[in-house]
Length: 311
Image (cartoon, one colour):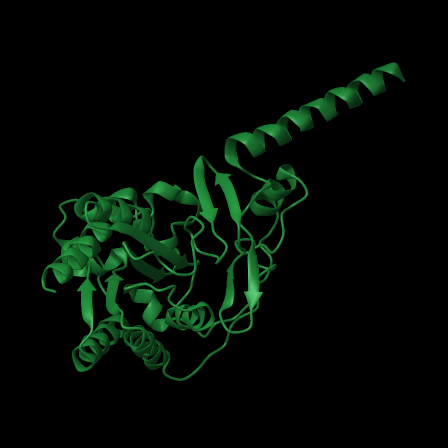
């Protein structure tokens, strides 16, 4: 009996040490959580501050990956509003200071800091498309921003309509914290992935998303702000096997669209192609490495500075 008691105590102690280690070292047990929204589909739950795998992630009161902000900017502030998906957000693999928005903010404060304080807001979430981003703007507004930057990638041209079906089902979109870090590890790595409902949408998805981009541009102009559209490529688009036929057609439609609408457009594809070791710009086929984030930030910052110099 004493032996059984001692063994039980040892097991409990080991589990406690494992639990504490998983929380402190990797940040398990404290994932980012999501809220559903009837128009946006889903967005990050407000007021979160977590550390996952050594990376700090802060979400403010408006579900942005930014520090808390005032609704309206101060007179001496240049406020830039970055909208996007996981590329803009950076998720758990990007520290707060190394997101595209944070890099742009630092660069512009160094260039313009004597005259203005630069704030770069970051409203983004995994797998958002132009229609999610439009719905966010329609719900929250522009926060008195003077420049709106919509950062998309090639896949976003085919994004489906906003839906909340993934929240609380897909393990990447939890709606609550797990009771234990150990439970999260078991659920994420040892158990089969839960079946996520399919979001069905027919019709011309490229057309739907171009219409959403046009509406974002219209809202921007209605608020006397400037609109910039930037697009990152997929890794295969500047290597082998190259862009697929439907992607080439969608890119041409986008090119025609931006010409018709007179949109300031930053295409990162030719810039990425010019990099000697282009694979170093990605952490997978779509998400950028720190080097990739730096290049995107440089291009956007230079465009903003160049535009300001012409005023």
